[in-house]
Amino acid sequence: FTLWVPEDAETVRGLFVLLSGLQADGRSFVDDQKWQELASKHNFGLVGCFFQSDPSAGLTPYMDAAGGAGQVLLDALKALAEKSGHPEIESVPLAFWGYSAGGQFACHFACWKPSRVIAFAGSKGGVYVTEPDEKACPVPGLFIVGGHDEAWRQAGVRQYVRKSRKKGALWCFAVEPGSGHEIGRSQDLVQPFLEAVVFMRLAVSNKGDGGGTPPELMPVSEKDTWLGDPDTFEIGKFSAEQKNPKKAVFLPDKETAVLWQKFCRGK
Image: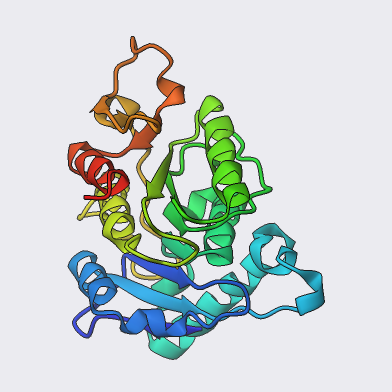
């Protein structure tokens, strides 16, 4: 694990946790200038992760946060808190982005420890097995598939999000046209999505106590959000009277809704 903290950060308010695909090293993601700018803007740190598991065990050890991998991350944050001189890092809220299996881990961590997660996003994942419950459904999530990725990945993710939306999950589904199973342009939507939710769930004045008490996460009020049609990409403000609102995807605000629409239309 690699930690990056803005030089002028006295107290870190949260962490963007960045993960790569199966058996791949994501620690260098913390060197990305755009992630550093986003973290500095919100007084966040960055954590890049490198998970490895027995290749014969397939995806399960990495993506199954509740099965051990999630605790590995929490143990790492405790160690990083001690080494960095930022004790708050052990308990601050987390916002995840992961590519492929890393995105699957991000989703499953949110389902495992929802009270710890601001939001999560996954780019080009495919296998999601943890069903969100009433505690996990309010955690905003973004799932991006590639328009040229394998059909089973696209169909599986679409169905997983649709099923979870019916349960009330504040989740968004997006297709990147012309992209296969690569990161592609997904960051163009991931970073604005996560930032919008940070604004919604973590007030600027809410910084915890700088020690063991993390900032309190505010719930998302659906009446302030937007919806998008995953087939036509039409967008509109949420309305309780809207017909079948859970058939649409969740969008945190108007700005993100417009970006989602342009992204899905390849603009």
